[in-house]
Image (cartoon, rainbow, N blue to C red; front, side, top):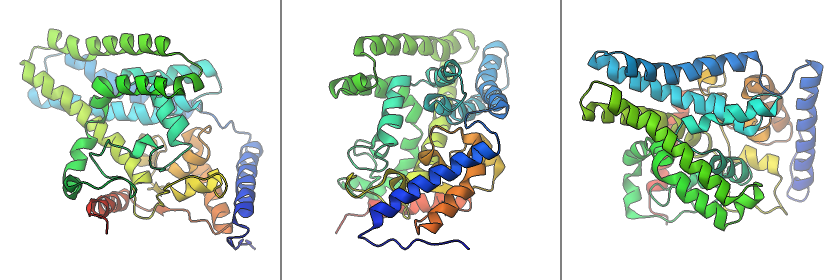
Length: 364
């Protein structure tokens, strides 16, 4: 019979530590008993090939063939879906070191970030170092900070413009990869240098600035200059196609993140005190899953609909999340810790918009 542990305030921390220990023990045992590596496998490598092809093949077709107007825009749209897919299913695992048991392969997978108009070191600091440590903590987790444009956290200052955020937020979401391409990486790199985060990441500002500038110039030449030089279309068609690609990728990536963390049923932690918080419990309190039983969504999203498992075990490849999810859920229930999930994608999407509406209202 399953034993539930009643969590009282006086012994909550000790019980949460026991939860953390037991959960890790059970997941470790699962991989041992099934003789599985927690890293990626052939299934992941095959998917990486498909996703990379879906991103790059349409681009080569656009450069080589004179297609109809419908297919011209359709190919840019497919590129956008492929771009997001590479980010979620290849780059993400690579930069977490979970794509492969070989570090060189992980680095190559992580370097796909350069193809997505982003930068590896700034992404690693924002995502691995800050977001995964201080999930949903205002002022520390930059993933819920839009510079005041969208109110994604109850501790953020309210502005009159936020009344309209349920309407304009999706359009700003679509600018994510364009922001990477043009502005964000340069600003972040300089700020991370000032804050000493580059030093914590065992790198230097000069080295990363050179990598940033060279990688951006290469990306600009391949994905901006070449299309204007080669594609036999009016310049505004090419520009619209590029914007369609970025808007598709940005919208996809942004919504997937928001549906895991910016939700009415996910606790928004104002501060993270090591005296009364256990990291694994904090991850459960600030993260939600959705569409766990939809293999197509799981495949395309790189397992990011299993955000709870990802936050608890970022070193484990997403191909294993469906297998360990029931272990996590059962263990959480034994300790009376809420395991937040939404059965359908549409349900999670609606709940995110509901929370945007809640946060759009002026606090009392």
